Each structure stands twice: as structure tokens, then as C-alpha cells.
Amino acid sequence: MFLTATTSPWALHSLSAADALTRSKAYAQVGRLVRDLSGNSSALAPKLASSPLQEDDKAYSLSLDLPGVGKEHLRIQIEDTVLRVETLEGAPRNYRAVYEFAQEIDSASSQARVEHGVLHLSLTKKLPVNKATELSIS
Image (tube, rainbow, N blue to C red; front, side, top):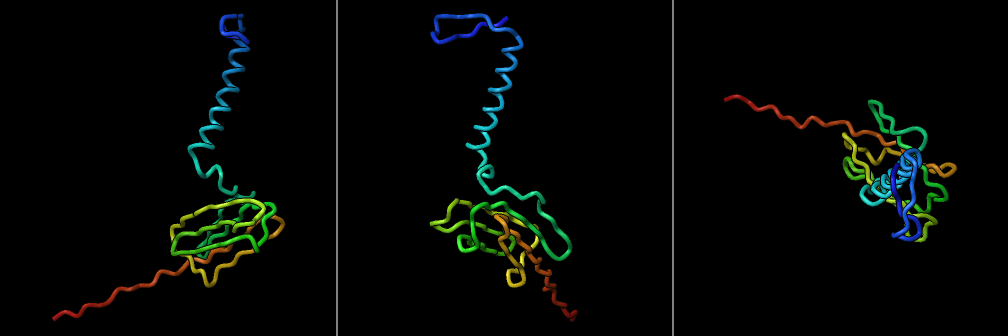
């Protein structure tokens, strides 16, 4: 049996073990939610749509849920291996996310489209260029 305070800190009543367990589980869930929202900035980033990041030899495919946001409200920037997606001022919702990929992205051949509140990105991988030069032996 556990003791807990009611409305007054001086008035105590008994709490069964089952009630105490139920309360501790509820407090643990609230605690996890607070930690996620305060310490993890990705909790505020747009959620991945039903299909997560997909990759093949030539491209990355990424879908982001952005309900209510049209293409006129989005800025998408690609710099080497980094993709930035953010809404512009005046957009109905605020989103900002940065993704880093293992291979450079070719912005000239990549594509983006918004369909029914989902941003679909097809990001073409840049082919690595061999910059090796042959050294002559003297």
C-alpha cells in the first residue's frame, strides 16, 4: 500500500498498488513526451510520410507530410550532401528540416512535387568523378 497527498499536502489517503502502477505509467509517458519535445529538435521536424527514405544506385526518394503547405510556400535547397526544406514567411504552417546524405546530390536533375499535402522528392545522386592523375616515372 502507498500513501499519496490529495488536495491538501497534510491530508493523506491510501492508494492501492494497481493505482500506483497506473499513475506511474501515465507519468512516464508524459515524461517521455516532454523529453522528446524539449531535447530532440527532430520531434518538431516534418514527419516522414508512410514510405520512409528509399534509395537505389541512382537516387534517393523522400516523402514528407506537409499538410496545408503549397509549393509556393516552400524553399528547398541542396548543397553537396545536405538537403534543406523550410517554409517561407506567411505559410500556413512552419516547417524546417535538414537532411544529410552519404553521397552528393545533383540538384540539376533532382525533382520535387507537392501532391495532396505530401512533398515528394526525387534526389539524383552525383556520380563520383575520378580526379586521379597518372604520375610519370623518371
